[in-house]
Image (tube, rainbow, N blue to C red; front, side, top):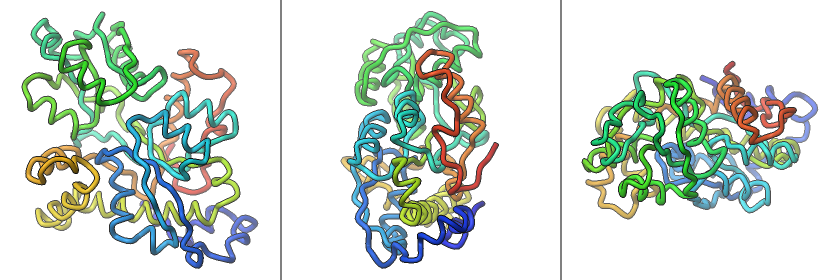
Length: 338
């Protein structure tokens, strides 16, 4: 685990850049906007906000919520938001290639032994024989857009099974859910707090786990503008410090269960303010608990997984062949896993 406090951040950044941090962000109460999805996987940000870790780091945070990853990347590039957690996508890589954004840390990871993302089948497809990923050949698979994490996962699963999928771009998670329920698409993969609720309805079926095909998959990353990564190193280090404390609290309560059931329930109460907030607590709690996945301690970043994703984008002609991981990632802030 990387204890990403200011002292460690300065050591990582190096002497020259550190000299620019003589006036800490703590003195400024800097206003920043943070992009998020209403997923349990974004809990690090929510906890850091609710428990004052961002405030302690000198940051006045405002959340802006999105329904898909690609618009979040565009919002970082345009300056509408300052930091965000989302999956690596073809769109994000293209913006990085234009010098607009940088990945600076890791957020959510697949880990064997933890529920993780499910592979789902519509009821109609399930009854017609789609009872395992081995039966995916010729089936339709929902994605938000070409080059999205859904596209990557579906392709890697299909490749492992020797299957060919028909990908259907539907832009938003809600639209994909509607298409799966109505049988307009046959399959999809999604985080467990959504997957298990859908499978529990009986109208959609869980037929496999993403971790069986993509162990140690770096599902989501922390990213910012290239300008923030290069020129606002103090603020960026402060953001990662607050975020990492939120992550540590989440893993302690939901993975290690250090606080027992009382700690789990306290964490559910906090997350419920952002995830399934429109549902009664008693109904939301089960889905929030089902959604438990490992968040990267200290925002550590699995670059081996990111390289695999980058290579896949290139193999699909979704990004330029000459783009390297250095174009996309600033590895100076957090522990790197290779």
